[in-house]
Image 1 (spheres, one colour):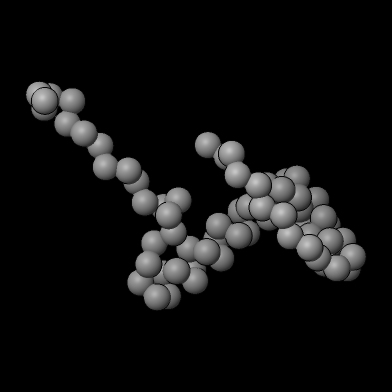
Image 2: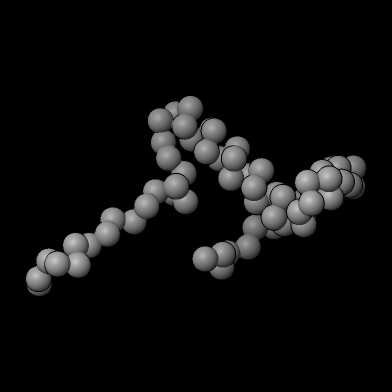
Length: 67
């Protein structure tokens, strides 16, 4: 679920480049930036032996288990 917002400030040339890259990839700027940021986060965190919080699957409970 995407219920959080991330606002960043960029220069005009950066914004133009991001918009163009998103256009080339066939994505909106938000989707493009999210994909790029997720990829970068995974890489950076993997380098120090950590997993990105969005990559960790919540533990599931055994449905046959009685409480």
